[in-house]
Length: 420
Image (tube, rainbow, N blue to C red; front, side):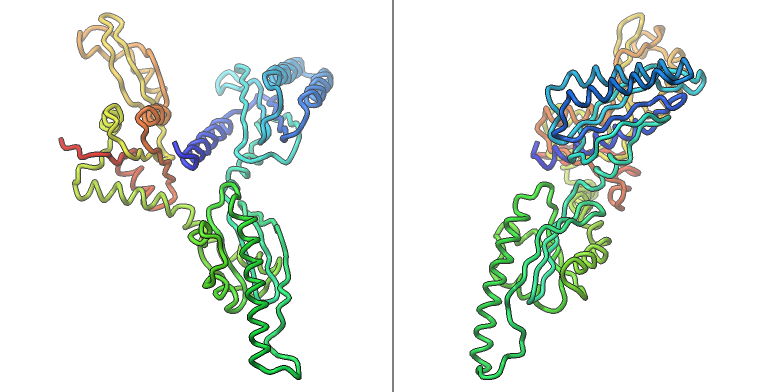
């Protein structure tokens, strides 16, 4: 899969894991969270965790003391599996998860490598896992370049999530439009245009140096007071790969850091639309093929799986809202195998009624669950084997809602026509 697609899928799986972790709760303050930034020495972290385990020996409650020390032991064991901290850092979770009826449960451990580098190192022991910093990283993954300029100065910044970091400030050295005495108006204007051209050339070079290879860059926004920004964009100052990445221009009252703040504030709605623009186009392509009955689209779990088995899927559309499992049932008497798709929130009810189901082949035997797999992951696995492009579609657009509501969150654009 292309890098962008792999990143999208990795991001979605990371989000799913955070949603799972949010459901976990301890009986008391017994759940351990450890954030380790890149570059941190494992030996140092291990020493800190052993000290915390010793300190936990002072906890008065015998049960709480044992659970906290056991959780710290599990974290240390997981940490031993790493030779060094990954380049984005490492987050470890461990603890005894409370069950609703009994109030106690089993020890569970989770290890996550974040999508962006961690900037903090800390240890927490609470009744829930500490997840907010990871949610913030997820929200801040996409990056946008910001250039604010007028004829006197330019400022370059990088926007990620809610945070805009200033990267560079430069001045132009261009004189104002009012000439000094003793110079002809034409000569003064020629000199000013020459200096302005040199300034624009420098701005273009900095845009290339700062934004061309910036990771996860979705585009560049150009702002500033007056027409200078438009004059810059009309000229041949930008690297050819960046010309198509200019998203919009924004009028501001200021330049510099205040101008960057204005651009961020005035671009909120626009950026929200940019984020979903590509997936809107993909869903619209799918809807067109369905509506026009071109034979180049299909939907439904079984239909899509069949198309994937035939390697006839160009693009697989998966909604973030898909919450179903693929359950393989086997008859206890004759061995007949049947596959069913079950909503995850109805899985417990399905298991309770399983004894009432009778084998479709022999009519006598009862079923037992032989295998269970998340439908989303099952389709991803099949798509990867079929070299199909995978697109994870949010539910925050009208098209995304329609995919989930009208097509069960699943769709496929085919390579060649398929008629029933």
